[in-house]
Each structure stands twice: as structure tokens, then as C-alpha cells.
View 1 (cartoon, rainbow, N blue to C red):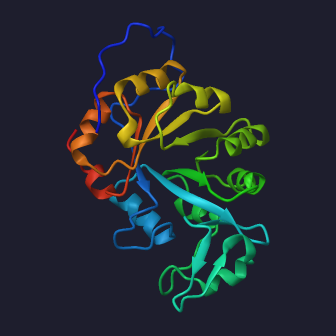
View 2 (view 1 turned 90 degrees about the horizontal axis):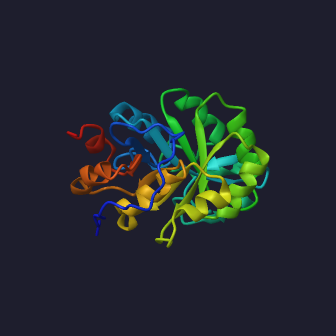
Length: 246
């Protein structure tokens, strides 16, 4: 349940380096996957057509070092064969299509397809693949940021590429939400939506960070979240959010 919080007097007024938006950024969670395979190029392009300003996606790496976009570490074929992505060479992923004619995409191909039309938020799920992901991002012209549930990954990313914008994913409410942001040098707090309140947003903003709500699928929450100053809404309902009457 979303909880309002009274105005707090103990926040210092500091200049914010992150500009505040008139409304939250519209972020598509794994693309327009109601009718298209999630984390696929067709789903990403359709989400942009529907009005997404940004795309959130997940990455792993194959045995031969190709960063690929897929949520789970395991892929499954139509006939029930499964394999760990990290144990499969990239050409062999063709045996595990997302749908007829739709293959698991490599991250560089996704970034090329999206281009400058949307920001790409890359969630690292695979282990020990930070250099591979950073290389793919740096070799692309797309605007990217990197986030993860494993905050050690984000520290590694910042050590490799200090200029990249990063974020920390949270599924619980820390006593001080700013701690993880400060420890990792991150710009974005990706907070599970049910733990967001005004206090959390104020604390993030006080350290010049942003709050992105995931996964924000309830239209009854969107205006409240915007009123608290949430900076981005990551949603499965991209068409509905893109046409929402603020």
C-alpha cells in the first residue's frame, strides 16, 4: 500500500544536480510484451511506438562472451530442452527462439535497433559480466544506464566506467534508502513500488538521486507517485501509461 508522509523538517536544502521532470519518465518493462515476446527487439520497438521514453531490459552473457537480452539465466526450446545461457555459445541460442522467427537478441543489436529513440536501462543479471556489458554500452551510440539487484556489480561497473549512470534495485525498504546510492555512487534508486512513500523520495532527492518505481502497473498509483516526486515509472502497461491524463 502506498503511504503518504508528512512534510519532514530535517532535510537540508541542497542544489539538485538531477533536473526534476514535470511528470515521471515513461519506462517500458521488457518491452510491449502483452502481445510480443518480452525482451525482444519487436517488443522494444512496439513499446517506443506506443510512447515509451525508455526501455528496461535484462542481460546475461553466453559462453563465448556475447551479452544477450533475456530475463532468466536458463533458456528453453519449444520441445522442452533447456540450457544455461552462460554454458551456450551465442550461435547455439538460435535453437531457443522466443517465438517463431524471433530470436534471443544480443545487446548490441538491441541498442542499434533502439538508437536515440529511447533511453535503455540495462539490468545486469549474469555474474561476472560487467566488462562485457560496459564494452557493449560504450561501443553503442544509445543512451544507456546500468542497474542491478547485486550492488557489488554496480560498484564494479562504476570502477570500469565511472561516467556511466547507474542504479540500485531494491525489493525491500531500507531504513535509509540513500545508503545504497551513496555506497555505489548511483544516480537511480529502483524501488519496488509498494515500498515507496514520500519519505523515501525525499531522502533520495536529498543526495541528488532519482527514484524509479517498479513495476508500476496500477493507474490509481501513478498520480500519487508523481505527486511525491517519483522520477520514473517502469510499467508493463506502456500504452496506458503513455496516454495517461496527468
